[in-house]
Image (cartoon, rainbow, N blue to C red; front, top):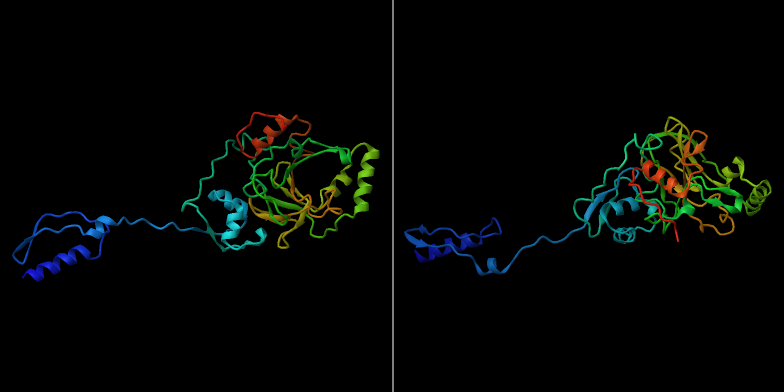
Length: 315
């Protein structure tokens, strides 16, 4: 009888079920009064779940910078964890280990402005995944461009200024839904002589004419968003062959790959000026044309649905 009772006690203490053991009232087993007790192992061991990397499935339009920002990790750690050497090599359906991430990604804060608040009637997404507006006024619209006797008409997204790396062939993303009205599939890079001649022409004229400015933008894609609003994506290294004039795109779709075409250094120092030049065109001009630095920055912050900043001049 004692052996039978002892066996039942062991089965009760060591059987399957919850890891947490609670004391129970005395029971009568085969006529013998017994009290189930905690085992020494149960008292000494605390079971904790092992940390594991979150696995993310790549969707259409995803880029490493945006994925890294979404989960609060660095692009470098993401590339190392997944043996990625080329950020542009992502493909839809690819499984990515997110090192050190929580199982739930960080929520994206809602825009602080609405379509009605935006100066162009729509709220744009960043054309570079995970990017921010540059803090450098020289990379914003209305900054002088002395080399060609003109002014800057868009925003530059450079590594070290855009909050994410901007390497060659990083996807450029549609800032809003629209229709492609220009896509430079056939593009011939400028020679050094052509660049020199264009700069000399602007110096003699005292301004940059539209034809010269178009050449300095390099390979381009233009998207019409309706109501006179067009976005331009410039200095592209390549464009998707599956898209073309007339293609309808959604915000976040890849419409090109970032490069340095058309820049002053594109012939003399290839890949020295890798960045995306992004323009918001309004009718026959560009957003905030002629405005001062603070008004310009605030106009683009509103267009992107960002909180307005108090302007502080760059040192």
